[in-house]
Image 1 (tube, rainbow, N blue to C red):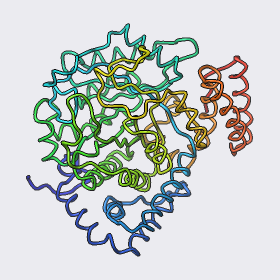
Image 2: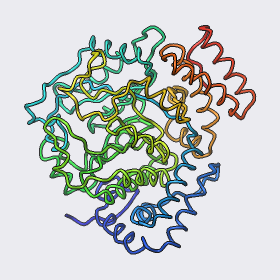
Image 3: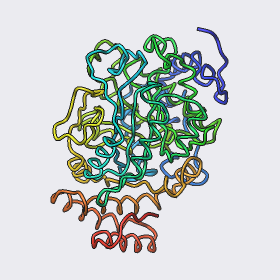
Image 4: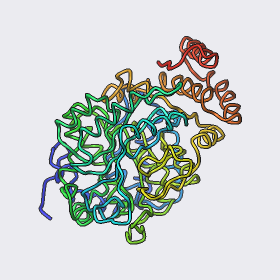
Length: 484
């Protein structure tokens, strides 16, 4: 592997995700992981984020975070989890944003060894939604109560060109069904050009999401033997092109299990540092998927699987290291893992998800076109009910995106702690919409009790009064779609 200098401000992937720097970081962590005084000093640095403010504290470096990841002292690990929960509450409160994925097409020209959509898989039927089918899926999702979608499609220049994605976005935004509307469309598609990112921006994209899969270049090339995704640098530099194209909010993620979790963690944090250094804005979200079983895919063939305990520690350390970012966990994980992840840093989860192409209009869950096995198969109402029973506010809020609080403007609000003045009342109002239009009787009962408790926690009396009036209008059927 060629040698490159480490430079977080470079636009070359080999320099801002520098292989030798990651190796040096792992060596640095191994040399210091048993120095408990040093570990505590790192935690003390992170603890400053328990109180967000305009003069927000310095974040941990990838080297400091890697030391904590390598440390196996039980007391330090317990403190990491406790501190992660405090920081998560400081920035995001007890709100959990809900969304659903919508798979548009599983046509793909890539040869990714861990994904059932790979071009050589003859076991999986290929399918692509028509615009009429997209409308039907959106209405089914609206009937569940969803307001935010993440659309997904395989990479196929002929079947899934950018024009198809843009047409689907226009269709999704156009569907107004009963009281339902999709207010934010996040997009997870393959790395593309600056011009095409500009098109996505003009189509009112929410967040552009692209998982790195693995930051280890040599392993990346092996896992992506054919297709345009084989180009590591084109893929890894995609977020810079997206931001050059005007997309304010981008979402990172690795697929844990493809390489050493310590290597991946360091690379992920370095990518966040790079975006901050170059663009002044870190990732809007970080996702933490793990390799799961699917058609033609056996997770046991990858020898880098991680335990639930390590997985939770990674989530906690991401929260400590990138305190301002939203963190996403999908239905790849079951109820128990998701419950703990919510405590340690996750702020967004999918609910009632189906990972097949379409599938929401079907009463029975289809499996023939699934990208991965869904571990959490509860309905959206069951997830909303469960969240409230665990003192989380289910939020369907999209206000920041629609009010222009994106990119550096969102980060300024978030880092200063001001975002709480918007998010808490917005969460309560969107929860009210769900309770009125979609909730089961038991969920509505829990929700009404939660609204009474949480309204009193809105600090500004004028905002609290207006929020209460808006909630009353929602329940009376005289108003909807309020936001601060």
